[in-house]
Image (tube, rainbow, N blue to C red; front, side, top):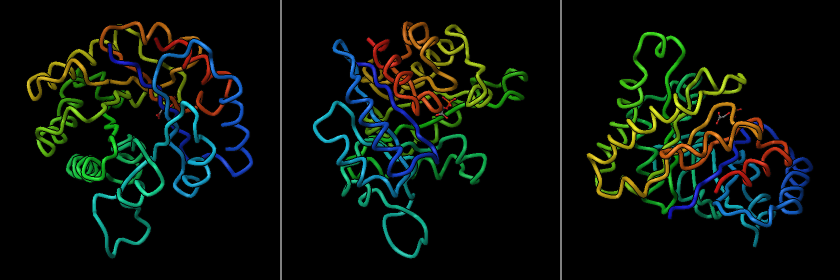
Amino acid sequence: MKKKLIVGNWKMNGSLAANEALVQALRAGWPAAADCDVAVAVPSPYLAQVQSLVDASGIALAAQDVSQHDAGAYTGEVSAPMLRDFGVRYVLVGHSERRQLHGEGDAAVAEKAQRALAAGITPIVCVGETLAEREAGQTEAVVRRQLAAVVHRNGRCISEVVVAYEPIWAIGTGHTATPAQAQQVHAALRAQLAAASAHAPAMRLLYGGSMNASNAAQLLAEPDIDGGLVGGASLKAPDFLSIIAAAR
Ligand code: PGA
């Protein structure tokens, strides 16, 4: 059985002191019965700090973004090999905040996934629709288009990718998708992946968008929801630990 994967997305939050307190609280409160994979996606300047804080714990290190380029004159960018140097195991690509606030398109997201894979880092490819797109009945068309670009560019490696479905209207709003709404989109994504890879059943599809301690168990009980990408609730150790305990 594949293990569920719970990823905390700290976004642009934290400090040396706050990161240390948070990771120590996670380590101290680790549920004895935890049976999932866990990672935290931290701001780049803190990769080295958190790499040592999570050493020999059940927590893997993730980054929040990666350059679509390998090296060179790209001021401000961080490459996949650089992330690898700091023991990064996963990287978010195509988070809606990057797509919406930083103009990242499907092609760039697909290239980022490719750079990560080439460096031995698992990309967590984020897809999701706006409220207007959902209300116009376009949800599946939008997420299929976003995923298709990544599938097309990454061919046979696609089974190495993790996909995160994050409806934009649910991110940071407290309006979680219902388990049925999320499952419907996850099933469509799984079918799309199955057309590209025989390994689609073993791939992990995460749900993200206001996942918290009280709704995680219900969401994670759906057959095609294999984990969570958790923003706000990942900054509070008791809440994140509850979600980890619910992932089985
Ligand atoms: P949220 O964020 O859990 O705060 O809604 C999720 C995300 O953006 O990854």
